Length: 199
Image 1 (cartoon, rainbow, N blue to C red):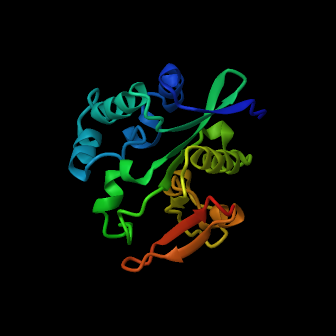
Image 2: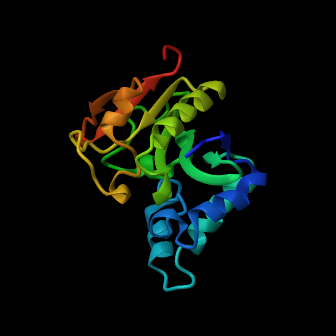
C-alpha cells in the first residue's frame, strides 16, 4: 500500500468518507458518531431496523463535515480513501464529558484535543497505516493550536485483538508515538496524553 497523502475531512471530501465507511458506516453503523452523540441518541440509531439503522449517526457526521468542522483525517492511496482517524477539540466529543470511565479530570482545561477512533478497511490493516494516521493527527492538532492531545486506548499487553475492539488504538501504539499512558483516577482505564508544545 502506497499512501500518497493524509488530508483533513473537508466538506469536499464527504463523498470519499461516505464511500470508505461503506453501507455499514465503518463499525456497526457507527459512522464515527459514538463519542459525538448522547448515548441515547447513538443507541437508538444503531438499534433501528434496516434500512434506517445508523441513519441519524450518518447524518450527524455529514452535518459536522459539511459545516467545515473537520471531524478527522482521511488517508488516500492514489485517489482512493483507505484510512481514517477522528481528531478534534475534546469538547466536541460529548460522550467523554458524560462518561464515568473517561470523564476529564479538568473538563475546562483549554487547548485539549482528542483522538477517539481509527478506521482501516481490511486491506489496509497491519501495514503501519494506523501509526501514520496517528502521526498526522498529532501534527494536525498542533498546527490548529492544540496544547495537548489525548486518547483512550486499549491495553492489549502487546498482543493482538480484533479490530472492532481496538478502534481507539492501543496503549503500545500511543507509547511508541511519545504519549504517556496513565490510569483514569476513577475507572482505571488508560488515558494517553501528549504535550504538543514539547513533542
